[in-house]
Amino acid sequence: MFVLIGYVIVLACVFGGFMIAGGNIMVIVKAAPIEMLIIAGGALGGFIAGNSIKVLKASVSGVLGLLKSPKFGKADYVELLKLLYELLMKIRKEGLMAVESHVENPESSAIFQKYPKVMADHHLLDFITDCLRLMIGGNMNPHELEAVLEAELDTHHKEGHAPSHSVQVVADGLPAFGIVAAVLGIVKVMEYVGNAPPEVIGQKVAAALVGTFLGILLGYGFVGPVASAMAVRAEEDSKPFELVKIALLASVRGYPPPVAIEFARKQLFSDIRPSFADLETELKGAK
Image (cartoon, rainbow, N blue to C red; front, side):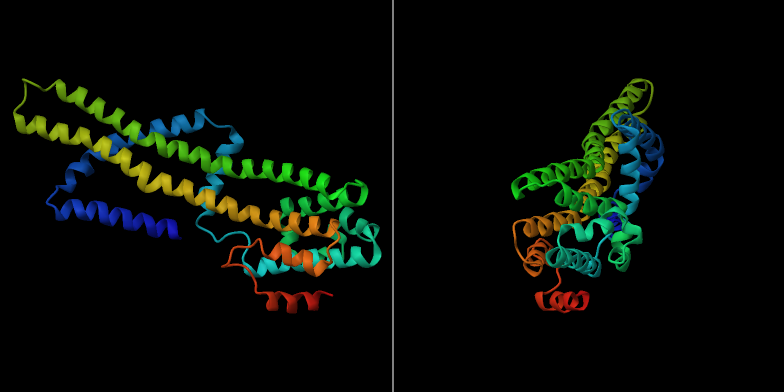
C-alpha cells in the first residue's frame, strides 16, 4: 500500500512541478510510448538474461507481496514464541526424546496443531523441526549447533535477498537505458538537420531528452524504491527464523524456557515486540 502511495506522490510532484513551471506535458506524453518501449524493454531483457527462473519468479512474487502486509505480525510472533515455549518446557520436564514424535509428525502433533500460523509456513515449520532433530540425535554442543544454524540462516538470507538485489540491478541500469533512448533520439534528429526549421528540430530534441528523463525517473522514483522495500520485507520475513535459532540455542546452553524465550523476544523490532508482561501472560496460558 505504501508503495502505491509513494508512486502517487512521485508522479504528482514531478509532473505537477513541471506543469506549474510552464512545461508542456504533451511533449512527454507523445514521446513516452516509444521511449518506454526502449527503456523498459531493454531493462526487462537484461533482467531476464541475468537471472534464473527461480529468481525471476521470486522477484515477481516479492513485488506483488509488497501490496500485502508482512507474513508475521505482533500476534503471530506471540504464537511462535508460545510454540517454542511449550516445546522447550516439554523438553525440560521430560527430555529431548519427549518431542521426537511431535518433530517427526508435526501435522498430527497436539502441540503444533495449536499454532496454525506456524503450521501454514512450511519453511519455518521445516526449520523448527530440523533444528529439533539436530538437538535430539546430533549430540552437538552449543557452538557446533550454532555454526550449523548460522550457515543455514546465511543461505536463507542470501536466497531471500536475491530478488531485491536483482531488482536493484535493474533500477541502477534504467538511467543508462534512458541515455540509450536519448542517443537514439538524437541520431534521429540529425536526419532533420538542414532539412527542417529550427522549431521542428527543437521539438524532436525535446522528445529525445524525454528518454533520459524517463530512465532516471523509473530508476530512482519507481524501481529503486521497490528494491529497497523488497530488501526490508526480506529482513522482516527472516526474523521468525532468528527467533527460533536464539531460543533453541539458549535452551541447549542450559537456560530455562522463560529465559530462552526472553532472549528470542529481544530480537524483535520495537513495533512488533510484545511487552514482557503481555508475553508472560500468554506463556502462562500455554503451560
